Length: 564
Image (cartoon, rainbow, N blue to C red; front, side):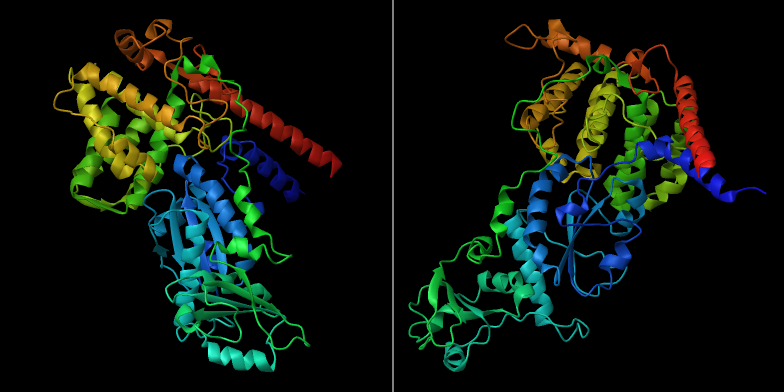
């Protein structure tokens, strides 16, 4: 009789040694970062119908500005970890194909996106997006405002349970209270203007300790004369209850300053240190060694172009939602260009032809309607990057592939139309601000000056090269930069010694190099170890990979069979 348990493990091993499992994208966070890792499976059960406020960062692991946000988001999450009765902090990686569906339902149009969900939110609520500087301090202030919003509307949230109140208390009432018996072991009075948030943030920060700490807010206009306070200056006043101490008077603890600094005055709270935490994905302080494989840089790779096209069509464009008008015409231009200027495989061409026919037969559509038309395209992550492969999954990848795609498009458009590179550059200038998910990256690109009326075809190729080098210079040493692939001027002298004369670029030689490097004659296949190989075709690489995967799977299966 067949042992189904053994066959089950056999197929699990087969699956987990396939490229889909090996090359799955890795997110920028883990549970140790005081965040909840959300995905398509747990988003509804975690965020919707929750009894607390949720703030969720929707990001793409390839997005440079998402990577730059990581230390701020981690600091924020760590600083509010004691708020967990009131606030949940989550992250979801929209670059992960398994999360595409939930990110589309949430109408994520760009990265990073931060959404706030009030208690008992229900699908299809997509949350509230607030545009503000994404520093830990600002994120804390918005969190306090959201928690206050719930407090002011408690009649709506009947099942909310115990929730803080943020009302100002009259000093005369406090005087009566404290002359009789202090309500808690520790008491704080925050003297502030009614528009300030210091007292509210202290209330939230100490909410988990409300059994022993009481916080009162007092309007500064009432503190001209009081038996409780030694002065009338704004700030925080503190009293530790001592039964025999009469009359009871608060001592001045702190002038207005960040709450994390005020909390340091309590022996068991030391939250301020989190702002000096270093991010484990940041480059080290020492100058990284350049371990770039120059052999990889000698070519560009069809795998990288296909991966770029797959992410673009399966994730970037569908997230736009309803596409119409000029955005719709722009998309038809883009799909026509990638069909005309590239030598794709038959399966990719088949999908592009079907997509072109669909776009030409309509005037508007929802981006999600693209997905059923792309069944023949590979799944996201089914093939690893080659020339654009980073030293970690969140480095390089899609942004590198998109640069490569447009470099190739500009260089090869010249073989079809003498003015093709100008047309292609105009398309890129229009496309990036509308469809590229990293918002700040797109905005930076859109601000680079150019006059398309006066530029010629060679000038278009050189403009893109100069712009790309400018971005590399700006991002050199940035947390989003791969330490093993430093952001250095392109091309390196090892690939084009004639391009740099020691003091300046030789633009004529640079132009020749770019046209040669990004021509179809310089495309390379990759072998099963992911390195360049001019002599190995893609079918051989696939056959070798399957052979190796099957060998590993079979070995594990046999071990399981005989041992278990």
